[in-house]
Image (cartoon, rainbow, N blue to C red; front, side):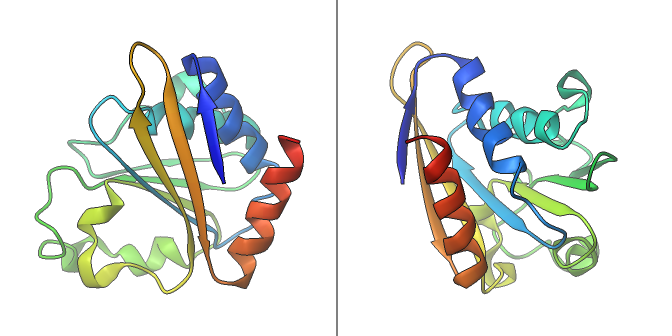
Amino acid sequence: MKITTRKPQETSAVGKALARHLQPGDIILLVGDLGSGKTTFVKGVAAGLRLKPDAVHSPTFVLMNIYEGRLPLFHFDLYRLDPGEQMNGLGLDEFLYGDGVALVEWADRMGGWTPREYLRLDLTHGGEEKRTLVLKAKGARYRQLLENVKAAFR
Protein backbone atom coordinates (compact mmCIF):
# COMPACT_ATOMS: atom_id res chain seq x y z
CA MET A 1 0.00 0.00 0.00
CA LYS A 2 1.36 3.40 -0.97
CA ILE A 3 0.20 6.71 0.53
CA THR A 4 1.48 10.19 -0.28
CA THR A 5 1.14 12.86 2.41
CA ARG A 6 1.66 16.56 1.86
CA LYS A 7 2.06 17.76 5.45
CA PRO A 8 3.03 16.29 8.82
CA GLN A 9 -0.59 16.19 10.02
CA GLU A 10 -1.42 13.80 7.16
CA THR A 11 1.50 11.51 8.04
CA SER A 12 0.30 11.51 11.63
CA ALA A 13 -3.26 10.73 10.47
CA VAL A 14 -2.04 7.53 8.81
CA GLY A 15 -0.59 6.43 12.16
CA LYS A 16 -3.82 7.33 13.94
CA ALA A 17 -5.87 5.29 11.44
CA LEU A 18 -3.58 2.31 11.94
CA ALA A 19 -3.78 2.57 15.74
CA ARG A 20 -7.52 1.87 15.69
CA HIS A 21 -6.75 -1.69 14.58
CA LEU A 22 -3.67 -2.47 16.68
CA GLN A 23 -3.65 -5.33 19.16
CA PRO A 24 -1.23 -6.43 21.88
CA GLY A 25 1.91 -7.92 20.36
CA ASP A 26 1.70 -6.00 17.08
CA ILE A 27 5.04 -4.94 15.62
CA ILE A 28 5.50 -2.00 13.25
CA LEU A 29 8.94 -1.58 11.67
CA LEU A 30 9.79 1.92 10.43
CA VAL A 31 12.49 2.56 7.85
CA GLY A 32 13.50 5.92 6.39
CA ASP A 33 16.15 8.60 6.34
CA LEU A 34 16.50 11.30 8.99
CA GLY A 35 13.52 13.64 8.82
CA SER A 36 11.40 11.28 6.72
CA GLY A 37 8.49 11.32 9.19
CA LYS A 38 9.05 8.24 11.35
CA THR A 39 8.48 10.00 14.67
CA THR A 40 5.60 12.01 13.21
CA PHE A 41 3.96 8.71 12.26
CA VAL A 42 4.56 7.35 15.79
CA LYS A 43 2.88 10.46 17.23
CA GLY A 44 -0.17 9.62 15.15
CA VAL A 45 -0.19 6.05 16.47
CA ALA A 46 0.10 7.46 19.98
CA ALA A 47 -2.91 9.73 19.40
CA GLY A 48 -4.88 6.74 18.15
CA LEU A 49 -3.96 4.85 21.33
CA ARG A 50 -5.30 7.76 23.43
CA LEU A 51 -1.91 9.17 24.33
CA LYS A 52 -0.82 12.78 24.12
CA PRO A 53 1.16 12.96 20.89
CA ASP A 54 3.24 15.88 22.24
CA ALA A 55 4.64 13.52 24.91
CA VAL A 56 6.15 11.31 22.19
CA HIS A 57 9.79 11.98 21.38
CA SER A 58 12.28 9.99 19.38
CA PRO A 59 14.24 7.84 21.85
CA THR A 60 17.52 8.20 19.93
CA PHE A 61 19.68 8.48 23.05
CA VAL A 62 17.73 6.20 25.40
CA LEU A 63 16.87 3.63 22.69
CA MET A 64 13.30 3.05 23.97
CA ASN A 65 10.41 4.98 25.46
CA ILE A 66 7.31 3.38 26.96
CA TYR A 67 3.99 5.19 26.81
CA GLU A 68 0.76 4.02 28.47
CA GLY A 69 -2.50 4.37 26.55
CA ARG A 70 -5.26 2.06 25.30
CA LEU A 71 -2.31 -0.31 24.80
CA PRO A 72 1.27 0.20 26.00
CA LEU A 73 3.39 1.70 23.23
CA PHE A 74 7.03 0.57 23.08
CA HIS A 75 8.87 3.08 20.89
CA PHE A 76 12.38 2.04 19.84
CA ASP A 77 14.96 4.04 17.94
CA LEU A 78 17.92 1.97 16.74
CA TYR A 79 19.73 4.80 14.92
CA ARG A 80 22.80 4.70 17.17
CA LEU A 81 23.23 0.93 17.02
CA ASP A 82 25.35 -1.05 14.62
CA PRO A 83 23.12 -3.32 12.55
CA GLY A 84 22.30 -6.42 14.58
CA GLU A 85 25.38 -6.25 16.82
CA GLN A 86 24.22 -4.37 19.90
CA MET A 87 20.74 -5.84 20.16
CA ASN A 88 21.49 -8.57 22.72
CA GLY A 89 21.35 -6.40 25.85
CA LEU A 90 18.15 -4.57 24.98
CA GLY A 91 15.68 -7.24 26.09
CA LEU A 92 13.90 -6.62 22.80
CA ASP A 93 11.97 -9.92 22.95
CA GLU A 94 10.12 -8.81 26.08
CA PHE A 95 8.68 -5.82 24.25
CA LEU A 96 8.25 -7.14 20.71
CA TYR A 97 6.08 -10.01 21.86
CA GLY A 98 4.58 -8.41 24.96
CA ASP A 99 1.28 -6.89 25.93
CA GLY A 100 1.72 -3.69 23.96
CA VAL A 101 2.50 -2.40 20.50
CA ALA A 102 6.14 -2.08 19.39
CA LEU A 103 7.19 0.59 16.90
CA VAL A 104 10.82 0.34 15.85
CA GLU A 105 12.49 3.27 14.08
CA TRP A 106 15.56 2.42 11.98
CA ALA A 107 14.34 -1.19 11.88
CA ASP A 108 16.74 -1.95 9.03
CA ARG A 109 19.42 -2.11 11.76
CA MET A 110 17.79 -5.10 13.49
CA GLY A 111 19.71 -7.67 11.47
CA GLY A 112 18.95 -11.16 12.76
CA TRP A 113 16.59 -9.70 15.36
CA THR A 114 13.99 -8.85 12.73
CA PRO A 115 10.74 -10.62 13.67
CA ARG A 116 9.26 -13.25 11.38
CA GLU A 117 5.99 -11.31 11.05
CA TYR A 118 5.39 -7.54 11.11
CA LEU A 119 4.03 -4.51 9.33
CA ARG A 120 6.79 -2.50 7.68
CA LEU A 121 6.52 1.17 6.82
CA ASP A 122 9.08 2.72 4.48
CA LEU A 123 9.04 6.52 4.50
CA THR A 124 10.75 8.71 1.91
CA HIS A 125 11.09 12.45 1.36
CA GLY A 126 9.24 13.91 -1.56
CA GLY A 127 10.44 17.48 -1.08
CA GLU A 128 9.31 20.13 1.44
CA GLU A 129 6.69 18.39 3.63
CA LYS A 130 5.66 15.72 1.12
CA ARG A 131 6.29 12.11 2.16
CA THR A 132 5.69 8.75 0.54
CA LEU A 133 4.66 5.94 2.88
CA VAL A 134 4.80 2.35 1.67
CA LEU A 135 3.26 -0.26 3.96
CA LYS A 136 4.14 -3.94 3.54
CA ALA A 137 2.75 -6.84 5.54
CA LYS A 138 4.58 -10.01 6.45
CA GLY A 139 2.30 -12.63 7.99
CA ALA A 140 -1.45 -13.19 8.11
CA ARG A 141 -2.08 -10.85 11.08
CA TYR A 142 -0.32 -8.01 9.30
CA ARG A 143 -2.03 -8.64 5.96
CA GLN A 144 -5.35 -8.20 7.79
CA LEU A 145 -4.06 -5.09 9.52
CA LEU A 146 -3.00 -3.66 6.16
CA GLU A 147 -6.46 -4.41 4.70
CA ASN A 148 -8.03 -2.50 7.60
CA VAL A 149 -5.81 0.51 6.94
CA LYS A 150 -6.56 0.37 3.20
CA ALA A 151 -10.28 0.48 3.97
CA ALA A 152 -9.75 3.67 6.00
CA PHE A 153 -8.17 5.40 2.98
CA ARG A 154 -10.63 4.37 0.27
